[in-house]
Image 1 (cartoon, rainbow, N blue to C red):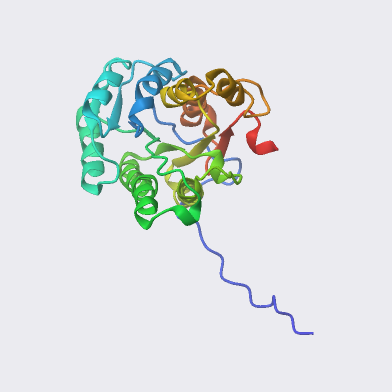
Image 2: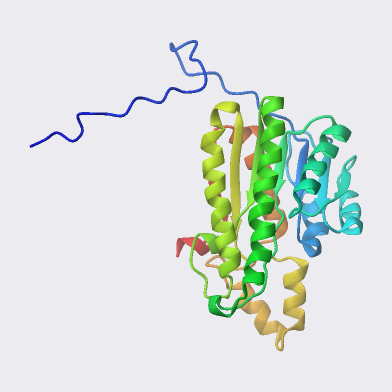
Amino acid sequence: MENRFRQLPPRIEPRYETQDVSGPPPLPEVPETIGLTVAGQVADLDRLAGALARAPRPDPARPVALVDRDGEAVARAAKELAGSIAIQADISDADQVKAAFETTVSQLGRLDVVFNNAAIDGRMARLHELEIEDWRKVAAVNGDGSFMVFKNAIDHFLQAGGGVIVSTASTTALVGKPDGVSAYSYSKGGLISLTRTAAIEYAADNIRVNAVAPTVVLTPMLEQFIADSEDPAATQSMVDHFNPMPGVVVPEEIATVVAFLASDDARRITGVTLPVDAGDTAR
């Protein structure tokens, strides 16, 4: 029988040089905590900023740049983080994203951590009821926007010698949901794949790339949804029992995980999408 494995492909050499093979390589120098937080859902921005302010960070005094398309909302949110700056930009606009990064580096001096949180839900409808405009609107923000954040962040990190990207994915990209979120789940599934690919592509450049995948989170938007429902008590109970663990996930719990993935404690973690879902995806 012919040995089909006789001709092996050439070995791909790493892009870095191995100088000492007598022991494990030294851990890379981990950046501090200046970051560009890209937050796209204005209704959630105030609480998210407060959550990030209270999340554990190596140096809470280090400033953060908050970016959002709503200038007033992002300015208000920036007050939660001492010494931080507010930048108005639309993540779906390539020139505005590039300018936001340049402004961050110019005003703060450097860029170490990017929290890529901007997203929209889009129209909630079954797939066959969506119009191509509905699909493209979600793709422009969640897909193209994430690409442009990654592109600009990585460009700065390569010049600085490393950095960290943490993105907000979703459990809708990990398990099927019959909730009319096909465009949203498609975009978040792409973000998870982009996270893995970028993590491998830039691992040797001291750039780590990870994501969190939240379940339903108690944001002002959800609180308003509960209040406006026909039976707020019943809706609240449904939300409280949405996941195997009773209760609802709050923004502070997401922020703590994001802070961990951006920290020195996670220096050997890259390419991972970590569910923060109270057991949702374990079912």
